[in-house]
Amino acid sequence: MRKLIFVLFLLVGICACPAAGAQSESPTTQSKPSAMQSKSPATQSKSSTMKAKSSATQSKPAATADVRHWWQNAVFYEIYPRSFADSNNDGIGDLNGITSKLDYLHELGVDAIWITPFFPSPQVDFGYDVSDYENIDPIYGSLADFNQLQAAAQQRDIRVVLDLVLNHTSDQHQWFIDSRSSRNSKHRDWYIWRDGKGPNQPPNDWLSLFGGPAWTFDPKTNQYYYHFFYPQQPDLNWRNPAVKDAMFDVTHFWYDRGVAGFRLDAVDTLFEDPKLHDNPILPGKNAFGDANMEDQYNRNLPEIHEVLKGLRKIADKYDAVLIGETWTTNIDQLKNYYGANKDELELPMDFMFTMVDKLSPTEFRKQIAALNSAGGWPVYLIGNHDIERSYNRYGDGKHNDAIAKVMAGMYLTLRGTPIMYYGEEIGMQNNDPKTKAEVKDPKGKLGWPQDKGRDGERTPMQWNDKVNAGFSKTRPWLPVADNYRTHNVASELKDPNSILVFYHRLLELRHTTPALLEGDYVALNETDPNVMSYLRSYKDKAVLVVINMSAEPQQVRFDLAPQGFSASEAKTLLTTMSGMTGQIREMTLEPFSVYMGEVSR
Ligand code: GLC
Ligand code: CA
Image (tube, rainbow, N blue to C red; front, side):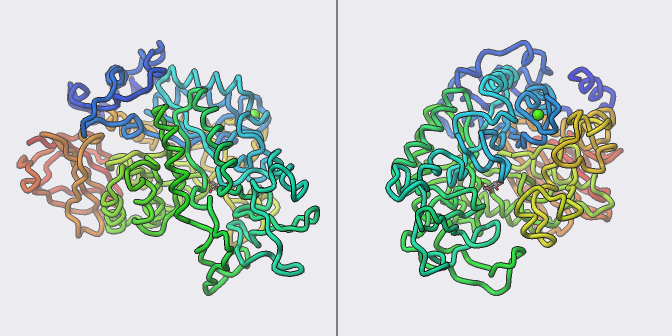
């Protein structure tokens, strides 16, 4: 397959043509841990540019502003293990399935995978209800399979990041089983137990994000326990130091097995107001029929930051990265997650960017500028396992493939770390359940039909146009999306105009172009409502990115003299348009098109 892609690049003769010697200029990716330093034959046979990337990883970082941490130049890729690849044909994806696809990811240009939870779990929330943090659920494999995955990933220079569910456990976790057994049990205070306000009255008005009250009564001990998510996901009591110690130990357990970091699940809900003040009620009702509510007293409490600092101290010992599931409503909140002394999360996700739900250069520029002003290293994503796929959210129903390239062309060339979502690179679409009976995600049952749950964005990866899209020989746990016949890995690899080949070229360019890794972001033509354009400027070179986000042809003009680039012509690096030259003084752009060219001082 590696050869096939290489031949494809040669045949197509497209413009993914990084400047010779680009690597030697780049002060990139110098801080890999020693475990990553021995290179396997698999890594050696990667294209020459990738080899250069690997060899740049050998030395330790010097303390200069220029030096990048590995996670700053890495492309991350989220894998939902149930749906990626099924090795034992039981209809559910598994760890060996992931291992079998590492060559695919390596070829694509993925540097790190974040795997959503595969720990033992009753699977009420499909793994986000963990009953043992230091093992593997048998449906996904064993610790031996994990070790094999980790080693195989390392051979390909791919790091493995796990998902750490700190806020809650499963109600089947030994801690909770003990906690609910009596008021005097050892783990009683590991969770949040309170008396009701009166008969059949929960302690306060807090609501679960997934519908209904956030309190469940347990007759055994005549108290309520608190759960921000499903009742089967009781919240841990982070005010108890024993909880912190136990969870910090969990991180050691996995770091010692070679993992490169964690994505921290639902960090904003770790703490609650100990006085249990009622939350303010807002007008209207949500999909579950509950009153809308402002989570003033059970979300984003300042105590979170002490926990993050503690986790970061451990992570730093392993050169590991902490990514945050950080839902925020303003940039100051997001800024806080980096830590006042940059001693908390390295990569807090910016969902304000993700949730821009229209192809609007004006909106994207606004979010990018805000994020850059926060002073941390930006992280960008356009989809994940909780939100409708980007293919549908941005697609207009007619030009979805072109729009998928438009979105990739933007977020994969911004200054920051991108996190891809599996299947995005082939244009996977949402496949929402058609009837309530089909729904697997409990919140989709409760919220039907207004909230159909998250099954739609979690369907099996589309590997080929054969039965079950090549995901499994058995009927998969969720139905494959209809577009698998055209949108699948095997078919797209053969089509030079496919979304997948575009991703390949783009990621190759990103890995080999210092300006795309290191360069500043300079917004251009900022009042243009249709065309998003910017420079990524580094030393004496810059990449000009021009993206037509509209369904009409557009004319744009660039004078880059104020930015120090007087040339009127760019060297084309990558474009979705045929016959496009680099005459930047006046360019005519096709609808939904992408142009990238290099300018020199
Ligand atoms: C996060 C996860 C989501 C899960 C929830 C509860 O939001 O991304 O999938 O349901 O936490 O763990
Ligand atoms: Ca399986």
